[in-house]
Image 1 (cartoon, rainbow, N blue to C red):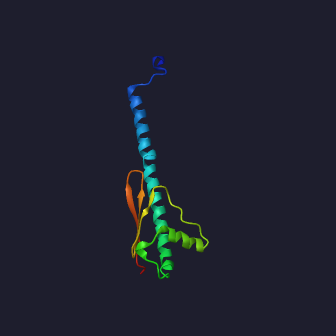
Image 2 (image 1 turned 180 degrees about the vertical axis):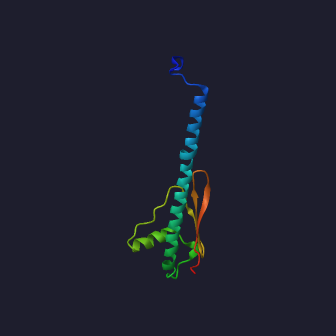
Image 3 (image 1 turned 45 degrees about the horizontal axis):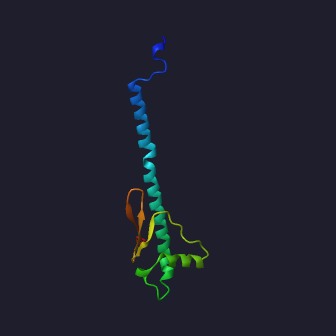
Length: 126
C-alpha cells in the first residue's frame, strides 16, 4: 500500500544519496577535463618541437646559423619557403623561453594549474 503522508517529501538519507551521486559524477567526469586538456596541450607542443627539430638539419646548411641562437621565427620562414603554413601553438606558450641545444629543444608552457617546461629530446635511431 502506498503511504500518502510521504507524497512529495524527501528524507535526509535520500538527500545524502543524491549529493553523493553528484559529487562522484563531478569527480569522475568534470574534474579530469582540465588534466586531459593539459595532456593534449603538452602533446601538441611536443609535436611542434619535433617538427622544429626536423627543420634544424636544413637550417644548419647556412653557415651563419647558430643553434643556440635559433628562434621560432627562423622555422616559420623556412616553412614559408616550403609553402607550408607557420606552426600553430596552443595558448599559454612562452615563446621567449624557447631553447635549442644539440639533441634537445624546450619551451615553457602555462598549464591549468602550473607552468612547466616541455622538452623534446631526439633519441638516436638504432
